[in-house]
Length: 216
Image 1 (tube, rainbow, N blue to C red):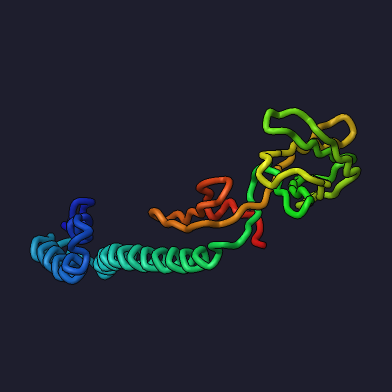
Image 2 (cartoon, rainbow, N blue to C red):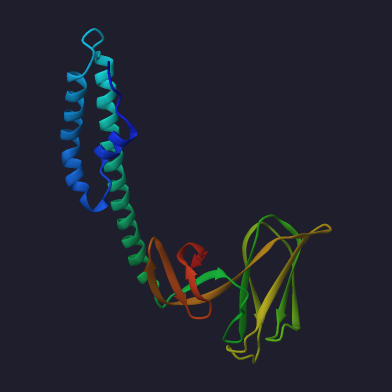
């Protein structure tokens, strides 16, 4: 009678230690052949294994080996992708990026900020806030379409390190629409950890590379 390979047999063929992958892969075919010969020696002579059974079990060992090779290939590609991301991230050091945040950037007497809308708005209002959260000025931007937008505010003699922020309110009819405030920041350093690339920003601290909205 034919004896099917068990889950334990397949685990044995695949190997259990990642530190001996190469050795396990080299010996898996030999172990498979030994198991197959043992099955054929102990089969019922009146009911021998047919070609379909042999083919099925050979497909099992090929599947195990194929998955192992695929995993190794994916791991290699993931490592190369992280190296490419790190190189790209390193080139951003000293450059400005656009990230989620509500800090107002002030340069040469002009305050700048931005926002993102998921849908068109009938009216958009930007409030400039003091460090204590008090409204010191309001900018009416009117109707705005979906997507990213920027705005300028006449900062006059306000210092760049005044610590001002802004708040965006968008409405459509009587409904208040969700908005994402965007700010400009500078990349000071880049770090990698596991499969994550992180940017160290001047004002926002650590921000994931995937959270960057745009590069200046």
